Amino acid sequence: MNPASSQFEPASLTIRRNDTVEWENTTGVLHSVTFDPAAAKSPDAVALPDGVAPFDSGRMKRGDKFSRRFDKSGTYKYICKYHEGMGMVGVVIVK
Image 1: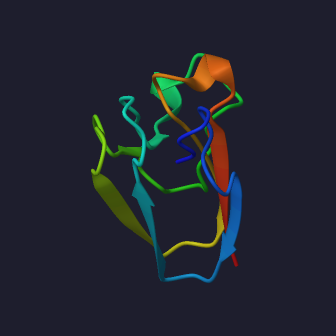
Image 2: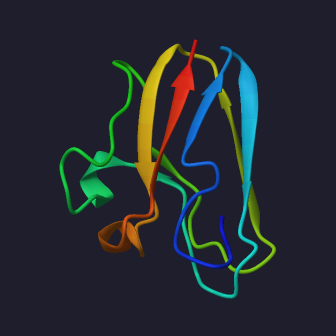
């Protein structure tokens, strides 16, 4: 997470199936890593491959980390539920 603005860094990431991604909040602002379409203000902001259940980091304060292993190929679009309106969105593409 970029300390200078409300952005995931990188905003887009391509990985292999079964890789693990870790996010860390390096800012003094509360953030989340939210892969839950029901939590999104914009219906297109969050998307999961068929059969993947929604998941969420919960509230992340400075120094908190969240990791997830991606075991199904596809495109995973996600948001910070606190800053989606400011463009804090990301995508993980799993090959």
